[in-house]
Length: 92
Image (tube, rainbow, N blue to C red; front, side, top):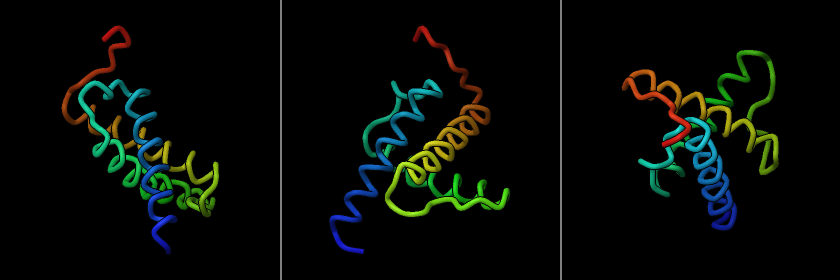
């Protein structure tokens, strides 16, 4: 993979992590680096979850892979919220 591909995946992971943090209410306490990390880990989690159901997870640099990363990132942050006792409050 070339440098542009790696940068593209970092950007995709960052966007997926940021949207997931908005969905789960974690955005105020997350920075850019954490959003990228959550998006990348979310891609692995999403790919693993979809493989359980016999579906392809990450299939390249496309919208499907973004949605898989977003799904995994939401699952990751929801799990973190459940473990830490943080709840989603839409007005905060």
